[in-house]
Length: 363
Ligand SMILES: Nc1ncnc2c1ncn2[C@@H]1O[C@H](COP(=O)(O)OP(=O)(O)O)[C@@H](O)[C@H]1O
Ligand SMILES: [Mg+2]
Image (tube, rainbow, N blue to C red; front, side, top):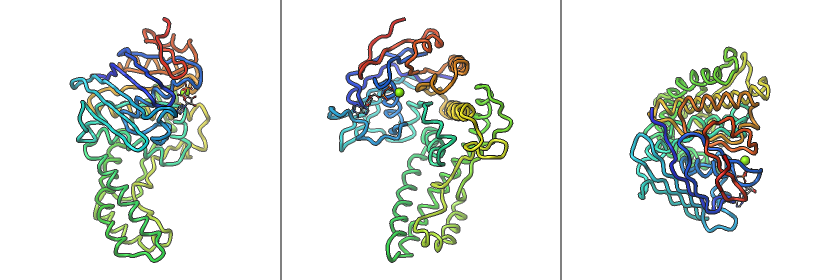
Protein backbone atom coordinates (compact mmCIF):
# COMPACT_ATOMS: atom_id res chain seq x y z
CA UNK A 1 0.00 0.00 0.00
CA UNK A 2 1.37 3.42 -0.92
CA UNK A 3 1.52 5.98 1.86
CA UNK A 4 0.49 9.57 1.26
CA UNK A 5 3.41 11.89 1.86
CA UNK A 6 3.47 15.61 2.32
CA UNK A 7 6.60 16.63 0.47
CA UNK A 8 6.27 20.36 1.04
CA UNK A 9 4.35 22.57 3.42
CA UNK A 10 4.04 26.36 3.46
CA UNK A 11 1.89 28.26 5.93
CA UNK A 12 1.48 31.98 6.42
CA UNK A 13 -1.02 34.04 8.39
CA UNK A 14 -2.65 30.93 9.87
CA UNK A 15 -3.02 31.49 13.66
CA UNK A 16 0.38 32.80 14.80
CA UNK A 17 2.36 31.15 11.97
CA UNK A 18 4.45 33.39 9.76
CA UNK A 19 6.16 32.35 6.59
CA UNK A 20 6.58 28.73 7.60
CA UNK A 21 8.17 26.52 4.96
CA UNK A 22 9.18 22.99 5.57
CA UNK A 23 10.29 19.96 3.65
CA UNK A 24 9.15 17.02 5.76
CA UNK A 25 10.73 13.62 5.87
CA UNK A 26 8.66 10.87 4.24
CA UNK A 27 8.80 9.04 7.58
CA UNK A 28 8.83 10.69 10.99
CA UNK A 29 8.73 14.43 11.70
CA UNK A 30 8.96 16.00 15.12
CA UNK A 31 7.87 19.57 15.83
CA UNK A 32 9.54 20.64 19.00
CA UNK A 33 8.91 23.82 20.97
CA UNK A 34 7.55 25.38 24.11
CA UNK A 35 3.85 25.79 24.65
CA UNK A 36 2.07 28.54 22.81
CA UNK A 37 4.61 28.79 19.98
CA UNK A 38 2.55 27.25 17.18
CA UNK A 39 3.13 23.48 17.08
CA UNK A 40 -0.52 22.48 17.12
CA UNK A 41 -1.29 25.24 14.64
CA UNK A 42 0.99 23.56 12.11
CA UNK A 43 -0.93 20.30 12.38
CA UNK A 44 -4.18 22.23 12.27
CA UNK A 45 -3.07 24.01 9.09
CA UNK A 46 -2.20 20.69 7.41
CA UNK A 47 -5.46 19.07 8.42
CA UNK A 48 -7.49 22.15 7.55
CA UNK A 49 -6.13 22.22 4.02
CA UNK A 50 -6.98 18.52 3.74
CA UNK A 51 -10.41 18.48 5.39
CA UNK A 52 -11.57 22.14 5.33
CA UNK A 53 -12.36 21.84 9.04
CA UNK A 54 -10.46 22.71 12.18
CA UNK A 55 -9.94 19.76 14.52
CA UNK A 56 -10.00 22.30 17.34
CA UNK A 57 -13.45 23.37 16.23
CA UNK A 58 -12.28 26.86 15.25
CA UNK A 59 -14.21 29.02 12.85
CA UNK A 60 -12.52 30.37 9.76
CA UNK A 61 -11.96 33.84 11.20
CA UNK A 62 -10.38 32.43 14.34
CA UNK A 63 -7.76 30.79 12.15
CA UNK A 64 -6.62 33.95 10.40
CA UNK A 65 -3.64 35.56 12.12
CA UNK A 66 -4.59 38.67 14.07
CA UNK A 67 -2.26 40.76 11.97
CA UNK A 68 -2.66 38.89 8.69
CA UNK A 69 -4.93 39.69 5.78
CA UNK A 70 -5.45 36.03 5.01
CA UNK A 71 -4.37 32.58 6.09
CA UNK A 72 -2.58 30.64 3.40
CA UNK A 73 -1.59 27.00 3.27
CA UNK A 74 0.17 25.09 0.52
CA UNK A 75 0.53 21.32 0.63
CA UNK A 76 2.28 19.17 -1.91
CA UNK A 77 1.22 15.58 -1.53
CA UNK A 78 2.71 12.51 -3.18
CA UNK A 79 0.96 9.18 -3.16
CA UNK A 80 -0.34 6.52 -5.49
CA UNK A 81 -1.44 9.23 -7.94
CA UNK A 82 0.82 11.89 -9.44
CA UNK A 83 1.84 14.56 -6.90
CA UNK A 84 -0.87 17.08 -6.12
CA UNK A 85 -0.83 20.63 -4.95
CA UNK A 86 -3.42 21.82 -2.41
CA UNK A 87 -3.75 25.53 -1.96
CA UNK A 88 -5.97 27.25 0.55
CA UNK A 89 -6.52 30.93 1.15
CA UNK A 90 -8.83 32.05 3.93
CA UNK A 91 -9.81 35.68 3.93
CA UNK A 92 -12.19 37.25 6.43
CA UNK A 93 -15.04 36.91 3.97
CA UNK A 94 -13.64 34.54 1.38
CA UNK A 95 -12.30 31.02 1.05
CA UNK A 96 -10.38 29.95 -2.01
CA UNK A 97 -9.35 26.36 -2.47
CA UNK A 98 -7.58 24.84 -5.41
CA UNK A 99 -6.33 21.39 -6.26
CA UNK A 100 -3.56 21.52 -8.86
CA UNK A 101 -4.51 25.09 -9.63
CA UNK A 102 -8.17 24.40 -10.32
CA UNK A 103 -11.33 24.45 -8.27
CA UNK A 104 -11.88 20.85 -7.13
CA UNK A 105 -14.77 19.19 -8.93
CA UNK A 106 -15.61 16.30 -6.69
CA UNK A 107 -15.41 16.42 -2.92
CA UNK A 108 -14.26 12.81 -2.57
CA UNK A 109 -11.31 13.41 -4.86
CA UNK A 110 -10.23 16.44 -2.86
CA UNK A 111 -10.62 14.87 0.57
CA UNK A 112 -9.20 11.44 -0.25
CA UNK A 113 -6.14 12.86 -1.97
CA UNK A 114 -4.72 14.33 1.23
CA UNK A 115 -6.30 12.13 3.88
CA UNK A 116 -4.92 12.88 7.36
CA UNK A 117 -5.73 11.24 10.64
CA UNK A 118 -5.27 13.45 13.69
CA UNK A 119 -4.95 12.34 17.29
CA UNK A 120 -5.05 15.26 19.71
CA UNK A 121 -5.86 15.89 23.38
CA UNK A 122 -9.43 16.96 22.52
CA UNK A 123 -10.06 13.41 21.33
CA UNK A 124 -10.86 12.28 24.85
CA UNK A 125 -14.23 13.79 23.99
CA UNK A 126 -14.70 11.10 21.36
CA UNK A 127 -15.38 8.86 24.33
CA UNK A 128 -16.72 11.37 26.85
CA UNK A 129 -18.35 14.01 24.75
CA UNK A 130 -21.67 14.27 22.93
CA UNK A 131 -22.63 12.05 19.96
CA UNK A 132 -21.88 14.90 17.55
CA UNK A 133 -18.14 14.26 17.88
CA UNK A 134 -18.56 10.59 17.03
CA UNK A 135 -20.79 11.44 14.06
CA UNK A 136 -18.08 13.81 12.93
CA UNK A 137 -15.59 10.93 13.02
CA UNK A 138 -17.87 8.84 10.80
CA UNK A 139 -18.41 11.74 8.41
CA UNK A 140 -14.72 12.55 8.28
CA UNK A 141 -14.00 9.05 7.04
CA UNK A 142 -16.96 8.84 4.70
CA UNK A 143 -16.36 12.09 2.81
CA UNK A 144 -13.05 10.52 1.79
CA UNK A 145 -14.23 6.99 1.25
CA UNK A 146 -17.60 7.30 -0.48
CA UNK A 147 -18.22 9.21 -3.67
CA UNK A 148 -21.15 11.60 -3.18
CA UNK A 149 -21.21 11.35 0.64
CA UNK A 150 -20.01 14.91 1.20
CA UNK A 151 -22.65 16.22 -1.19
CA UNK A 152 -25.40 14.15 0.48
CA UNK A 153 -24.31 15.42 3.90
CA UNK A 154 -24.53 19.00 2.72
CA UNK A 155 -27.92 18.55 1.08
CA UNK A 156 -29.28 16.79 4.15
CA UNK A 157 -28.06 19.56 6.44
CA UNK A 158 -29.62 22.21 4.25
CA UNK A 159 -33.01 20.48 4.15
CA UNK A 160 -32.90 19.84 7.90
CA UNK A 161 -32.15 23.48 8.74
CA UNK A 162 -34.90 24.71 6.44
CA UNK A 163 -37.44 22.28 7.92
CA UNK A 164 -36.47 23.28 11.46
CA UNK A 165 -36.86 26.97 10.65
CA UNK A 166 -40.42 26.24 9.49
CA UNK A 167 -41.12 24.17 12.61
CA UNK A 168 -40.15 27.13 14.79
CA UNK A 169 -42.60 29.52 13.14
CA UNK A 170 -45.49 30.79 15.20
CA UNK A 171 -48.04 29.27 12.84
CA UNK A 172 -46.20 26.39 11.19
CA UNK A 173 -47.24 25.59 7.64
CA UNK A 174 -47.56 21.81 7.63
CA UNK A 175 -47.44 21.44 3.87
CA UNK A 176 -44.32 23.57 3.56
CA UNK A 177 -42.71 21.45 6.28
CA UNK A 178 -43.63 18.21 4.55
CA UNK A 179 -42.12 19.44 1.33
CA UNK A 180 -38.76 18.79 2.97
CA UNK A 181 -39.56 15.19 3.80
CA UNK A 182 -38.45 14.05 0.37
CA UNK A 183 -34.90 15.47 0.42
CA UNK A 184 -34.54 14.53 4.10
CA UNK A 185 -35.48 10.92 3.47
CA UNK A 186 -33.50 10.68 0.28
CA UNK A 187 -30.20 12.06 1.59
CA UNK A 188 -30.75 10.97 5.19
CA UNK A 189 -31.29 7.31 4.27
CA UNK A 190 -28.16 7.42 2.10
CA UNK A 191 -26.15 8.75 5.06
CA UNK A 192 -27.48 6.00 7.32
CA UNK A 193 -26.63 3.31 4.75
CA UNK A 194 -23.08 4.59 4.32
CA UNK A 195 -22.58 4.87 8.08
CA UNK A 196 -23.88 1.33 8.66
CA UNK A 197 -21.45 -0.10 6.14
CA UNK A 198 -18.63 1.93 7.66
CA UNK A 199 -19.46 0.82 11.21
CA UNK A 200 -19.22 -2.76 10.01
CA UNK A 201 -15.53 -2.15 9.19
CA UNK A 202 -14.73 0.41 11.87
CA UNK A 203 -15.78 -1.66 14.85
CA UNK A 204 -13.43 -4.62 14.26
CA UNK A 205 -10.64 -2.19 13.28
CA UNK A 206 -11.05 -0.38 16.59
CA UNK A 207 -10.98 -3.68 18.49
CA UNK A 208 -7.76 -4.65 16.77
CA UNK A 209 -6.28 -1.23 17.47
CA UNK A 210 -7.21 -1.53 21.15
CA UNK A 211 -5.25 -4.73 21.22
CA UNK A 212 -2.30 -2.94 19.64
CA UNK A 213 -2.32 -0.15 22.19
CA UNK A 214 -2.35 -2.67 25.00
CA UNK A 215 -5.81 -2.68 26.37
CA UNK A 216 -7.95 -5.74 26.77
CA UNK A 217 -10.65 -5.33 24.16
CA UNK A 218 -13.03 -8.02 25.42
CA UNK A 219 -15.27 -5.83 27.50
CA UNK A 220 -15.49 -3.08 24.90
CA UNK A 221 -18.47 -2.73 22.66
CA UNK A 222 -18.89 -0.23 19.84
CA UNK A 223 -22.23 0.01 18.15
CA UNK A 224 -23.61 2.28 15.49
CA UNK A 225 -27.01 3.55 16.62
CA UNK A 226 -28.88 5.07 13.71
CA UNK A 227 -31.83 7.30 14.52
CA UNK A 228 -33.57 6.64 11.22
CA UNK A 229 -33.86 3.95 8.60
CA UNK A 230 -31.48 3.43 5.71
CA UNK A 231 -34.53 2.64 3.60
CA UNK A 232 -35.90 5.79 1.99
CA UNK A 233 -39.53 4.60 2.07
CA UNK A 234 -39.38 3.66 5.74
CA UNK A 235 -37.60 6.95 6.51
CA UNK A 236 -40.34 8.92 4.75
CA UNK A 237 -43.08 7.10 6.63
CA UNK A 238 -41.33 7.76 9.95
CA UNK A 239 -41.15 11.49 9.20
CA UNK A 240 -44.89 11.57 8.46
CA UNK A 241 -45.65 9.62 11.60
CA UNK A 242 -43.53 11.96 13.70
CA UNK A 243 -44.86 15.23 12.34
CA UNK A 244 -47.05 16.09 15.33
CA UNK A 245 -44.19 15.35 17.70
CA UNK A 246 -41.82 17.49 15.60
CA UNK A 247 -44.37 20.31 15.70
CA UNK A 248 -44.55 20.04 19.48
CA UNK A 249 -40.77 20.02 19.99
CA UNK A 250 -40.31 22.52 17.15
CA UNK A 251 -37.51 20.58 15.50
CA UNK A 252 -36.95 17.37 13.55
CA UNK A 253 -36.29 14.49 15.93
CA UNK A 254 -35.54 11.59 13.62
CA UNK A 255 -32.62 11.41 11.26
CA UNK A 256 -28.88 10.81 11.01
CA UNK A 257 -28.25 14.16 12.72
CA UNK A 258 -29.17 12.29 15.91
CA UNK A 259 -27.13 9.11 15.28
CA UNK A 260 -24.52 7.89 17.72
CA UNK A 261 -21.67 5.46 17.80
CA UNK A 262 -22.23 4.03 21.23
CA UNK A 263 -19.18 2.94 23.19
CA UNK A 264 -19.84 0.64 26.11
CA UNK A 265 -17.60 -1.08 28.59
CA UNK A 266 -19.01 -4.24 30.17
CA UNK A 267 -22.44 -3.04 29.14
CA UNK A 268 -22.14 0.46 30.61
CA UNK A 269 -21.39 3.67 28.70
CA UNK A 270 -17.60 4.05 28.49
CA UNK A 271 -18.02 7.74 29.23
CA UNK A 272 -19.07 6.80 32.74
CA UNK A 273 -16.97 3.75 33.52
CA UNK A 274 -13.69 4.11 31.62
CA UNK A 275 -10.72 5.43 33.56
CA UNK A 276 -8.66 8.32 32.21
CA UNK A 277 -6.09 5.88 30.81
CA UNK A 278 -8.72 3.66 29.25
CA UNK A 279 -10.45 6.68 27.76
CA UNK A 280 -7.20 7.76 26.10
CA UNK A 281 -6.50 4.29 24.77
CA UNK A 282 -10.03 4.10 23.40
CA UNK A 283 -9.77 7.46 21.68
CA UNK A 284 -6.45 6.47 20.15
CA UNK A 285 -7.91 3.16 19.01
CA UNK A 286 -10.72 5.00 17.24
CA UNK A 287 -8.18 7.14 15.40
CA UNK A 288 -6.10 4.11 14.43
CA UNK A 289 -9.29 2.46 13.22
CA UNK A 290 -9.96 5.57 11.13
CA UNK A 291 -6.52 5.13 9.61
CA UNK A 292 -7.00 1.43 8.88
CA UNK A 293 -10.41 1.94 7.32
CA UNK A 294 -9.23 4.84 5.17
CA UNK A 295 -6.26 2.79 4.06
CA UNK A 296 -8.53 -0.05 2.96
CA UNK A 297 -11.06 2.23 1.28
CA UNK A 298 -8.76 4.70 -0.45
CA UNK A 299 -5.87 2.36 -1.22
CA UNK A 300 -3.41 4.79 0.36
CA UNK A 301 -2.07 5.16 3.89
CA UNK A 302 -3.18 8.51 5.39
CA UNK A 303 -0.75 10.96 6.96
CA UNK A 304 -0.81 10.73 10.75
CA UNK A 305 -0.76 13.91 12.86
CA UNK A 306 -0.11 13.29 16.55
CA UNK A 307 -0.57 16.34 18.72
CA UNK A 308 1.09 16.25 22.12
CA UNK A 309 0.79 12.47 22.45
CA UNK A 310 3.23 12.29 25.31
CA UNK A 311 0.86 14.36 27.41
CA UNK A 312 -1.88 11.88 26.56
CA UNK A 313 -0.06 8.58 26.78
CA UNK A 314 2.57 7.32 29.17
CA UNK A 315 6.07 6.70 27.87
CA UNK A 316 5.57 3.03 27.25
CA UNK A 317 2.39 3.55 25.22
CA UNK A 318 4.01 6.41 23.31
CA UNK A 319 6.96 4.19 22.39
CA UNK A 320 4.58 1.42 21.42
CA UNK A 321 2.52 3.76 19.27
CA UNK A 322 5.61 5.06 17.48
CA UNK A 323 6.72 1.52 16.75
CA UNK A 324 3.31 0.72 15.38
CA UNK A 325 3.34 3.84 13.22
CA UNK A 326 6.76 2.97 11.83
CA UNK A 327 5.50 -0.52 10.98
CA UNK A 328 2.47 0.96 9.19
CA UNK A 329 4.75 3.00 6.97
CA UNK A 330 2.65 6.15 7.43
CA UNK A 331 4.22 9.58 7.30
CA UNK A 332 3.85 11.06 10.74
CA UNK A 333 4.07 14.51 12.33
CA UNK A 334 4.48 14.60 16.09
CA UNK A 335 4.36 17.72 18.26
CA UNK A 336 5.98 17.80 21.67
CA UNK A 337 7.66 20.03 24.23
CA UNK A 338 9.91 17.15 25.26
CA UNK A 339 13.11 16.51 23.28
CA UNK A 340 13.24 12.99 24.74
CA UNK A 341 10.09 12.13 22.76
CA UNK A 342 11.93 12.81 19.53
CA UNK A 343 14.40 10.11 20.52
CA UNK A 344 11.54 7.57 20.56
CA UNK A 345 11.05 8.13 16.83
CA UNK A 346 14.36 7.04 15.32
CA UNK A 347 15.39 8.71 12.08
CA UNK A 348 12.77 11.44 12.41
CA UNK A 349 13.42 14.90 11.02
CA UNK A 350 13.28 17.56 13.72
CA UNK A 351 11.96 21.07 13.47
CA UNK A 352 11.83 23.68 16.17
CA UNK A 353 8.84 25.96 16.48
CA UNK A 354 9.50 29.36 18.01
CA UNK A 355 7.02 32.21 18.10
CA UNK A 356 5.21 31.18 14.92
CA UNK A 357 8.34 30.41 12.93
CA UNK A 358 9.93 27.07 12.12
CA UNK A 359 13.62 26.31 12.02
CA UNK A 360 15.67 23.16 11.67
CA UNK A 361 16.03 21.17 14.85
CA UNK A 362 19.28 19.74 16.04
CA UNK A 363 19.95 16.05 15.61
N1 LIG B 1 -5.78 33.89 14.97
C1 LIG B 1 -4.64 33.98 15.66
N2 LIG B 1 -3.71 34.93 15.37
C2 LIG B 1 -2.55 35.02 16.03
N3 LIG B 1 -2.22 34.19 17.04
C3 LIG B 1 -3.08 33.22 17.38
C4 LIG B 1 -4.34 33.06 16.71
N4 LIG B 1 -4.97 32.00 17.26
C5 LIG B 1 -4.17 31.53 18.22
N5 LIG B 1 -3.04 32.26 18.31
C6 LIG B 1 -1.86 32.05 19.19
O1 LIG B 1 -1.02 31.13 18.54
C7 LIG B 1 -0.15 30.55 19.50
C8 LIG B 1 0.17 29.13 19.09
O2 LIG B 1 -0.76 28.23 19.55
P1 LIG B 1 -0.56 26.65 19.43
O3 LIG B 1 -0.37 26.27 18.02
O4 LIG B 1 -1.71 26.05 20.14
O5 LIG B 1 0.80 26.43 20.21
P2 LIG B 1 1.49 25.10 20.75
O6 LIG B 1 0.80 23.93 20.15
O7 LIG B 1 2.92 25.21 20.32
O8 LIG B 1 1.36 25.13 22.24
C9 LIG B 1 -0.80 30.74 20.83
O9 LIG B 1 0.00 31.59 21.59
C10 LIG B 1 -2.13 31.39 20.51
O10 LIG B 1 -2.47 32.36 21.47
MG1 LIG C 1 -0.24 22.42 21.24
